[in-house]
View 1 (cartoon, rainbow, N blue to C red):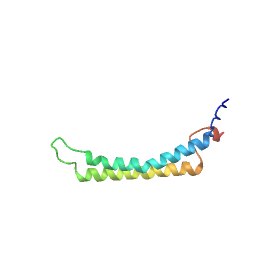
View 2 (cartoon, helix red, strand yellow):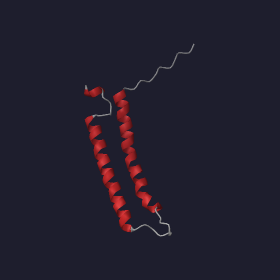
View 3 (cartoon, helix red, strand yellow):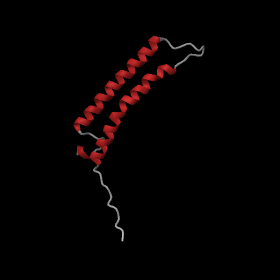
View 4 (cartoon, rainbow, N blue to C red):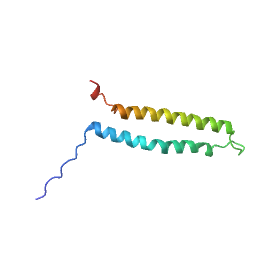
Length: 88
C-alpha cells in the first residue's frame, strides 16, 4: 500500500523572501538588457541615434537600477514582503 506523499508547506514569509531574492538576482540581467537597447535604435535614414541621447538613456537606466537596488535591499533588510500580515 502506498502512502500519500506529504505536502511541502512553505511559510508565506520565507517563500516571499526567496522570491524577493530571486528578483534581486535578476536586476543585473534586466539592467544589461536595458543597456543594450540603444544598440537597437535607428532612425528612418538608417543613421544611428545621437550619442548624447544614448548617454542620457544609459545614465537614466543606471540611476533607475540604483534606486531599484536600494529599495529592494531595504525591503530585504526590513523583512517586508509585500503582505499586510506582519503590519497589524
